[in-house]
Image (tube, rainbow, N blue to C red; front, top):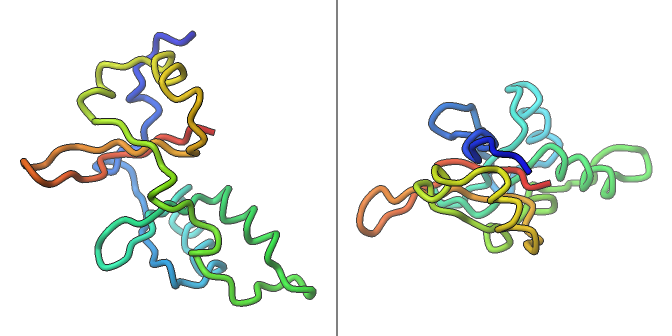
Length: 136
C-alpha cells in the first residue's frame, strides 16, 4: 500500500490544463481538440454547469464502437461517450489533502465510478470542481 499523498493523483484544475466541451459537440472534433491541446480529459458543460467528463480513453472506446462502415464517425456526439456527472463519486478537497493513495484505494474499492471529483467549498452554498482523479 502506498503512503504517497492522494493529492499526487489529482489533475488539479487550478494548475493543469483541462478543456471543456458541450454535450452536443461532435465527438471526432472534441477528440481532435483534446489531442491538439495535449489534454487527457474534458469537462462536459451545459449552461456553464459541469454535467460529465469525457476522457480520451472513453471517447476513443466509444468512437471505435460507433464508427460507420467506412471507418468515419456517423454524427456521434460527446453525449454518446461522456461519463455523466451522476455516475461520478466525489471527495472534499480538504479531506483529500489528509488522505494517502492507500486510503483512496480502500474508500473507493467498491465504487464503479471511473473518476473521483474533488470538490472544494468556495462559499457557504457554492462548491466548485477543484480536481479529478482517474480511478481506472
